[in-house]
Amino acid sequence: MSPESAAGAVLSRAFFEDPAICWAVPDDTARRGLARWFTAMTRWAQRFGEVHALGPAEAPTAVSLWASAPADLVQHVRAGLLAPTLALGPGPLLRFMRLGDALAKWHHRLCPEPHRYLAFVGVDPPHQRKGLGAEVLRGELARADRLGLPCYLETATEANLIFYRRLDFSVVHHGSMVPGAPGFWLLKRPMRST
Image 1 (cartoon, one colour):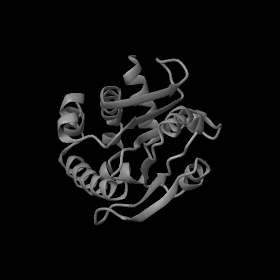
Image 2: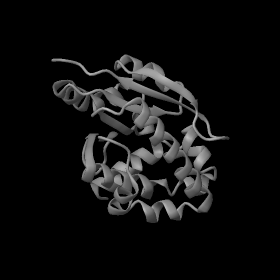
Image 3: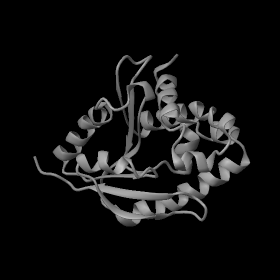
Image 4: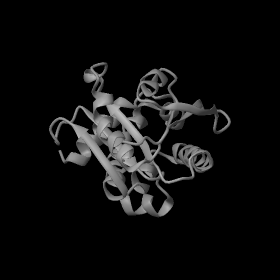
């Protein structure tokens, strides 16, 4: 298995029960196809941002995908995201598009300055609750501090707020982005001087 596929598999397992993913791809069988989608997201982050992983490249335990902004349509095409998204079916495609558009608008409104964007962080379920999520984020958070950049992320899982607050993120907005979708918490970590 390639490092990109291994990272995609970890993220698909970590996000299998995520409220936003379940809303976008409600069918469990279709959601198993998210490994291809997350593999393409990993390629996007390699090309347009950063990928950080813990453990061997062929079997990571935790993965984070960073960039300076969410993927736009051109980046989706260049990273090969269209085919795995289309493979999920027309309903998931439309829901992902609507949600992505709404989140991008809020992102631009709440964090227009240069920053680091945490697109995804996931820990393989057997390795969760061991501090690996914070560990896989530390390097990029320290880099943002050295550069004097804030960080930004979105989560649809309220239980994640405790984790992100420990890393100095604060909620800057909460609400439903798209009718019928779960609510999102939009978080920002202020720039730090070192």
